[in-house]
Amino acid sequence: MNSQTHVIMGAALFGKPMPRLAWAAAAGGIVPDLPMYLIIAVLRLSGYPLNQIFREIYWEHWWQIANGLGHSFWIWGGLAIISGVLVHRQRHSDGHDVMLAGRAGAAPLVFAFSASALLHSFIDFLCHRDDAHMHLWPFTEWRFRSPVSYWDSRHYGDWFGLFEAFIGVVLVVVLFRRYKSRLLRAALLLVLALYVAVPAFFFFNLGG
Image (cartoon, rainbow, N blue to C red; front, side, top):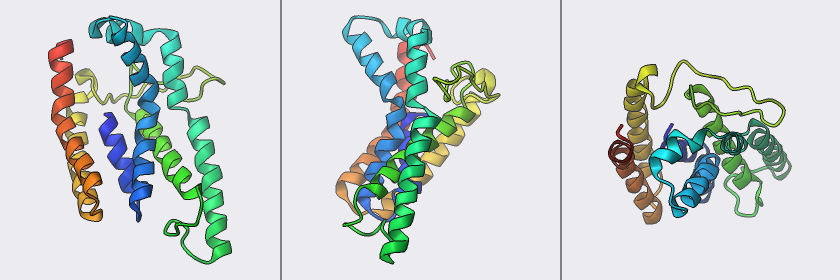
């Protein structure tokens, strides 16, 4: 999926009921893609053209390791389990919902962040084909090459893109109604714009 869909999906599923949890989940939704964005930024500043970056350098083994670490089931699954256990213990020992309590500490925020990152990684596991990630690295370089690609029209990418855009718009509406924060609502409007801007960027810069 595109990064913006991961962000709003994480916020919708793990950000309730407090805006600060939504921000944590939104951050977790994008963090698996941060290694890719950082590498692209460095390469662009070094003068490499986008066509060379995406068609050649992206497939280098070191970049695939960076993608594997960013989408690691070990890292995000481990953090989600540990923080989830802490949240569960706090809920039962304190007798209230720690997700609502400002004094509950960092565990709820870490859980929202890591669970969202894990969801991102799992969705990418299901909808990447030739560009599949090594989710279990460093123990194995095995990749699941899904029959469905979120972008490749040869593997249902066009249909998946329509489905993703529909889900994204629905989730933006849900989050817009759930939270009254002006900053959060402005971010949601930016997300909506990205559903047009991202495809346009790749079409005009990479020829499709």
